[in-house]
Length: 244
Image (cartoon, rainbow, N blue to C red; front, side):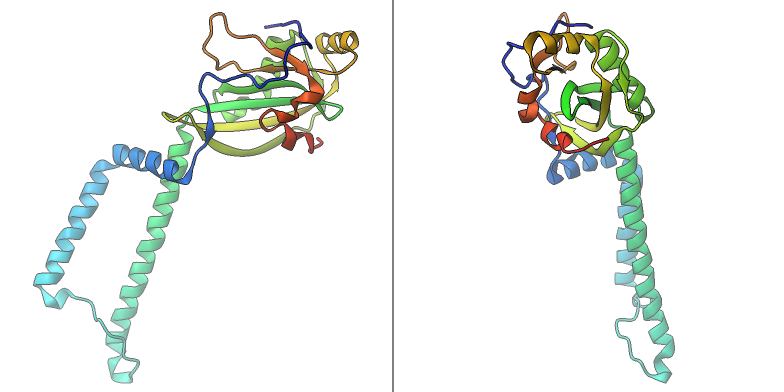
């Protein structure tokens, strides 16, 4: 998709079809809880049934109850060891529970749909910005970013430095679904002809902004704004302070 920039256009952030925002801790727990119950229901039910039977056994058979006191005397070493084993057993169970929880979090996040936002800067000013494009996998980030910005936004190849800057993956939600959000910044060594010509015509650098997830037919094209007015756009102020 190639578009002719219109620098006279108002410098407003494109409104996404799905309003995305960072996932809160409460929402993270709610989505994770739903995922765990859906995927691990038999194991959870079996675990609680087993714990219930164990509690009933201990309640009705006193000999199965663990020692309740630790007496550091020579004649009570056996009782002390039994209590110590109980303590370490509970500690091991706690550690295992944390490991299980972390593995579930990794499994859950690994199955979430992915979004990619890519930023191309020139002379530390934004030149090409794409928000929340669908992403197949992390291995496709670099190639897909070049495809979006080069082929679909300016209709040509891009020249940029080999070093690419990234930010930690974050979780976003639109209220009905959760997404993994990947962000990457490229530093252009040369402006593509479309932007260079637009800059010469207007006397100031031009930036193209595209939000491909907007539900429009035909798909919405990139919006042209003055690069110096892009600081108010999401994440641009943070990226502007970085150099790759």
